[in-house]
Length: 238
Image (cartoon, rainbow, N blue to C red; front, side, top):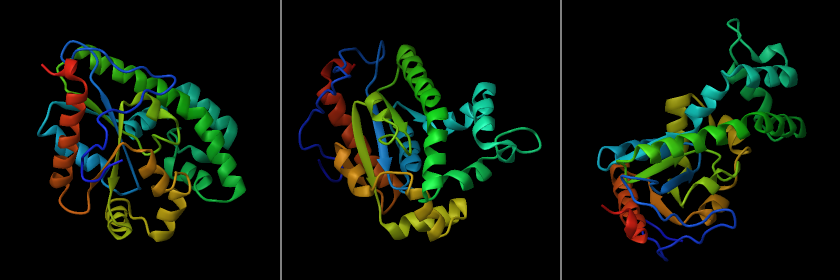
């Protein structure tokens, strides 16, 4: 475990269901770096900054999740579980209404959240896997940044070769979600009940970067981590 973009050991141990990659960048698989952190930590912003400096692809699990909610078979399962009230007049899933039913710490909402995750998480994982394979087959990239709010909770960390924790203060996170999502502290805390604690996320990561200042600085730290990952996989370097 490290701070400010430096690994304490150059390699993440392979998980029981995951072997170390042995392919060549540009012609095959690129390493996947999973980004975790608190809500409002700026994971997506840091990832976007890195794309301006290096040939990396960003895979946004939230975007894929929104796409999954448009699939007829998923909508049918949601309708069966939550009823018509979570659909708008155009028969699209009303994500705000659905969120009100699943976010919170009551037993009822925890069960509702679990039921929703059972419906959508397998499809999201399948789409993530497909996108990773597509990006790797296309080649021409150094790495794939996997930006997923519930990367650890959903078990999608099994798709990643390295995990990086994006850190910043609670005050900064609240300011960001207030400005970007119009959330207050109560809403932020309610949403955070659906995720692991920050300490648990930090402990699960291979490295930590500090996004309390300029996101470009945090992107520089992430770039240093990318360099170390590429060194760990010398066969990936062109």
